[in-house]
Length: 160
Image (tube, rainbow, N blue to C red; front, side, top):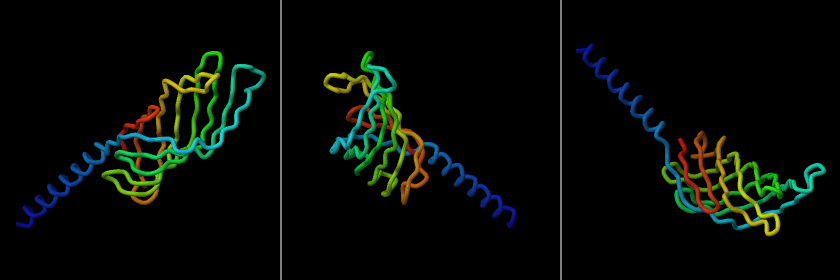
């Protein structure tokens, strides 16, 4: 009888481990929209002696998130704009404070890496692609990892 109980207990534990591993690997899908509510402060200057390259540093850029992520994010970022080609590349650190459906509330900080096309006369932006990686969080959002992709208005990704 004792051997049967031990085998049953072992099988139950293996089942729990396999189930929790499958759940963790699947992750939580997040998607929705965001709206810029504050452009922050931007300073730009030429890079070296080039008349075509600009480096712009922005602090306090704020967005309001809706959808699976509900809350506010603030980002500080640096971008280099090539006014001859229109190519823009940049990176920054973004901190989201709010709630993620299926996970809970807290803050989540990540690294932004982006590229786009910039019109150097109007500073209009197009073809914007941003990848968010390298997460760290607090409260219920602590320990999350994954990737979120952004366009100019939407986000979509998986966190686990």
